[in-house]
Image (cartoon, rainbow, N blue to C red; front, side, top):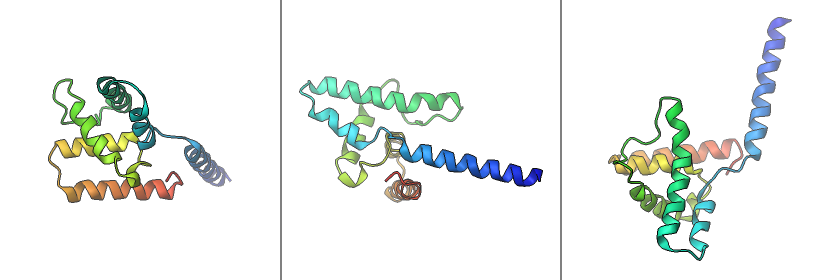
Length: 133
């Protein structure tokens, strides 16, 4: 009876987690490109995007597994350029910014296009599986 109860609790937890996750709206390419529609200077747009990036990566420092490995000093502008290019394709806009920052870091770290595309495809597949695409 105890085992059955534990199994039911675990199944219930995953069902609730999946349902909550499916209703959550991640910051993604649609939010990213919306910044470009604002009537503000290019420098202000870049600063807003840098704040997006920082909000995506800073929590990762607390778990001991930083999201970015190839950032030089406080230079996030290279990330902004790569993410701008990535999100310029509408097929990539559903990808949450967190993963897109990882892709930018992979590019800056000289990962191969094959590695980057495989990562992108695996993320998009997982998003589709959990109903977020």
